[in-house]
View 1 (cartoon, each protein chain N blue to C red):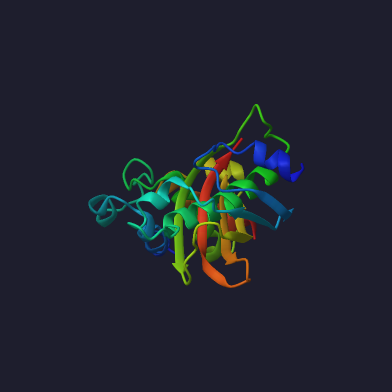
View 2: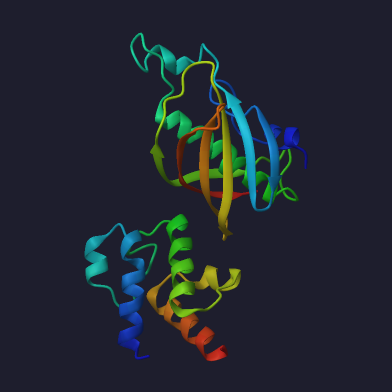
Length: 145
Length: 84
């Protein structure tokens, strides 16, 4: 399965798709990136006249790349564009260290901790373009074809 | 391990995942993980992983489907321990 095939299997679309590219993936982990556009819808309200990417959106970006894309890759024999995965976020614990401004590119690095009985639990980091740690945590979801 | 010890260990394992305190306080062999304790399917996986670690056993897909109550969990743990 190629990176673009994985992305096509994602059940999201604009304005809630936070995956541009996947640069490395295996059954042990995945690395991908997303560039926040200057006109993302949430910058209008977060914050008033001071656009900063919300932590929940960073968490979502980590979950889309780090858990859902990785999960699709792991279920590659059963998932395709017609048969998208059923997914549910089941837990997230994330600590935040730096802000992400409009136009910034972020890199998500995820390591699989457990994938059993349809539950995928990962250790996920999000870095900015300078390689600085923006946030990290543990995210789990249920995933099946 | 006595039955009581096994129930006590299982009780400690499920505690972080339960949503019904009353059913948890009255936990017995007949307690159902999903219907009584209101443990969701994602957390049921955590219970199983914790049971594996606690008893140093490996639970397979078929066992997972059966493991919906304290009684079933006790049977599975005892079977796996006997196989060791």
